[in-house]
Length: 245
Image 1 (spheres, rainbow, N blue to C red):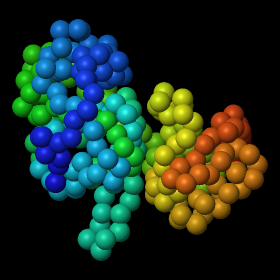
Image 2 (cartoon, helix red, strand yellow):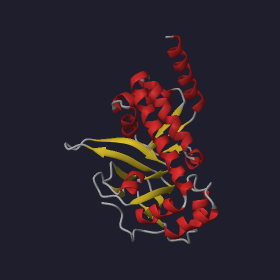
Image 3 (cartoon, rainbow, N blue to C red):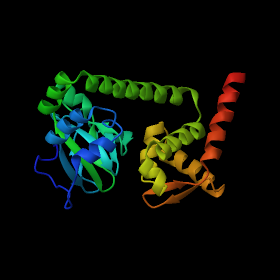
Image 4 (tube, rainbow, N blue to C red):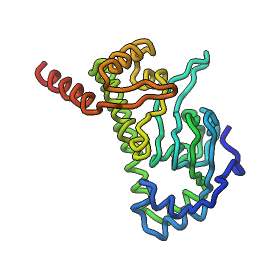
């Protein structure tokens, strides 16, 4: 079930226009368009563990992450679940159901206290019709998602576990300016293993090995990358080896 329309809001004054203008998705749009988005959008604060929506829910809302992080996952009929992606500050989610009005294709849960901006489908579709440049921006986002999905499939086929693990850690480390500033990546080893298609035990063993090398530091509920250059070098060496093979 999606968050109710009267969900928790910020207790402090919230300048939606400023937030929209700073958000990577909206910042390059015309100021008048940003103002229209801000007029229809709702700001929400969600606690760690809060369910934004579940797979199969009828979706009508697009979300933009301002702070925190959201886990996108899916569950099987026998109760098993897997993590597909982490949505970080500066990214949007919920766009598929917002576009077609259909069921959610996956679930979304806050993995830490987070701040979101939400806009309903009826308002969003109106803005798309009025402003084609917004549609182009969304196409770019969807293409980026498709490219990343294809890359993840290729990685599972062609890369070993260390390379896949290094790649996802660097992605999470560099994807969000906020995360880069505070260093800690708030993600569990279980979530990491699911995103790279490996067992938790195998991922943990590799992470412990890199911790001994001082490449990273494992902490409760996350980890800190200490030597991103070492992870980059591992990927570069792997790429060179594949070219020689």
